[in-house]
Amino acid sequence: MRIGVLTGGGDCPGLNAVIRAVVRKGVEVYGHEFVGFRDGWKGPLQGVTMELGVPQVRGILPRGGTILGSSRTNPLKVEGGINRIGENLAARGVDALIAIGGEDTLGVATQLAAAGLTVVGVPKTIDNDLNATDYTFGFDTAVQIAVDAIDRLHTTAESHHRALIVEVMGRHAGWIALHSGLAGGANVILIPERPFEIDKVCEYVTARFERHYAPIIVVAEGAQPAAGTMALQAGELDAFGHVRLGGIGQVLEREIEQRTGFESRQTVLGHVQRGGTPTAFDRILATRFGLHAIDAVHEGVSGVMVALQGTSIVRVPLEQATAELKTVPLERYAEAEVFFG
Image 1 (cartoon, rainbow, N blue to C red):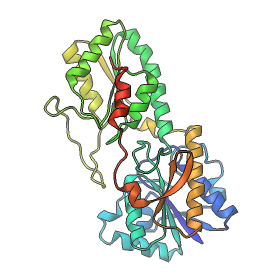
Image 2: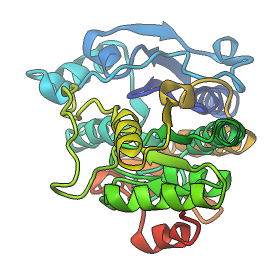
Image 3: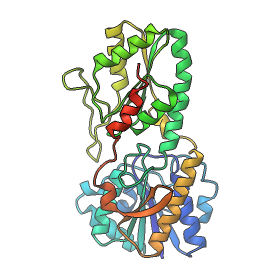
Image 4: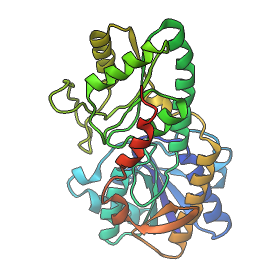
């Protein structure tokens, strides 16, 4: 069997671990051949490939990013995109495709499976917002990077008596903000699932200073103020219709300083959270996903995604995985609120 592999969407620590596991088991246990499609869905759309075998995956386990490259190319926005992918796969003798990606990448994979192509998905998002899986690889690494930053910012906040704002990733789900804020001892955590009152945030900041400590505010990039309380600037859209976010930290810096009189500074972690070597947890999870993905392909299964449920790797329908985002339950957020202020 000849199998294609691609990585789509934003890069993520652990992608190379998946690729390595798929190829190693696929070649050495099952005797399959592989072709790597470059730069996400752009590869199968335009027929851009690279050689992918055991020599190409040696030494990549601890490497961040993806040796296949990635992009946010959306075949569903291209006329005849699904048919073109099918034709390019057939022209290269590809019998099945393993798509490693998040909501958007796996949404395209769902359409391909519905069109009759053999497709297996592997969940990838540092936001941890894919449904039907308890965790996605890359999330643990992103949280650890954020916690390291928060730990360092505590000392400079205390030294200069400043309110420090840490903006982390999280478009629609605040998992990174929640976990890093809790682990880092943040005094306020703001997430997209719970619109915030800027006056309440300022109360927490003031209360912290009154106890002779400096506050740390962790905010997800997609956090929104309650209606009518604070203006935000709209951003442009990407190929999947998502607003390019960023800037909430800057707005909070200005508002907190103006409303409380305390000096405030923002730190935007941005793509730092995506880069670098994955944690041990993410290497293991990504490896297990890869091993189970190639098992599914070898057995002729299609239209499924491998997922972590408890400690087991299971298969779930792609439609279930992409039907809705996994967001932070408000009861989980309430646990964190105990430590605000």
